[in-house]
Structures are given as C-alpha cells and as structure tokens.
Amino acid sequence: QVQLIESGGGLVQAGGSLRLSCAASGRTFSNYAMGWFRQAPGKEREFVAGMGWNAASTIYADSVKGRFPISRDNAKNTVYLQMNSLKPEDTAVYYCAARWGTVTAPEASFYRYWGQGTQVTVSS
Image 1 (cartoon, rainbow, N blue to C red):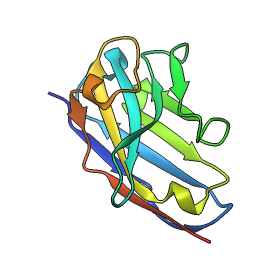
Image 2 (cartoon, rainbow, N blue to C red; image 1 turned 30 degrees about the vertical axis):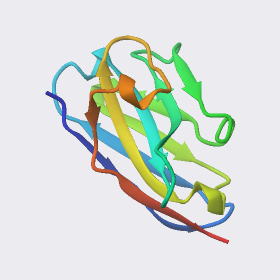
Image 3 (tube, rainbow, N blue to C red; image 1 turned 120 degrees about the vertical axis):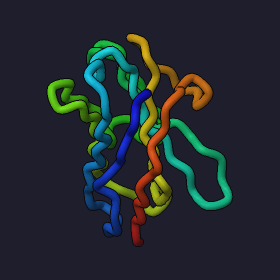
Image 4 (cartoon, rainbow, N blue to C red; image 1 turned 90 degrees about the vertical axis):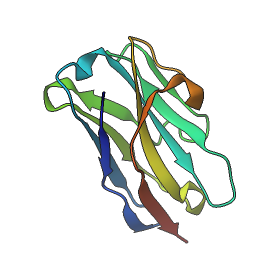
C-alpha cells in the first residue's frame, strides 16, 4: 500500500511558477512509476507528466512539454512537478499517481495509487 500526499498548489498569476510535491509512504518508492494528472472543472482528468523509476523513462503531455519538468528524489520518497510559464488554462486540481514498475504511462487506468489532489489556480 502506498499513500500519496500532494502539496505546493495555490494561486499564481499567469507567467508565474509553482512547484508541486508528492510525498509517498513506504520504503520502496524507487520501484514505483509516478505520474501527474490534472482535472479542470467540467473536464476529464488528463495526463500531465510521468517518470519511471529512473529519469530515462519520462513522458509529457504536449500542452506542458518544455514548461513542466518532472523530477524525483528517491531518498526523500518525493516526486516533483515544476510548473513554469503558467497559463490560465493550467488551472485544475493536480493529482499524483503511482504504480509498481519501472516504466510510466499516460493512461490514468495504469496507476493504482492516487493522492487527494492539490488546487492550482492561474489568474490572467
């Protein structure tokens, strides 16, 4: 069982930055593929970024590629999403997700464990 707790959300102006963190419980965090998703009001949950057990397996949604680098610190059991050049359309609840395994994937059904989400609001 893995518990995920997101933090770092908030209100920011367009063009600004935020860094989301996702802290995971357990001693085998390095064996989990991690993903970030987001869900805006009235829209389906969508993939943002994912990282496998090492940085070699990293994928991004086209909408955030070059703006939202994902990283992980296995010693701290934490995965990060650095959000730069934020746009109002990035406003959503952001979720962290995990699945045992080495590679990541963009499908929400791939992931077994989910955090409670953190709100990100970007004002114009």
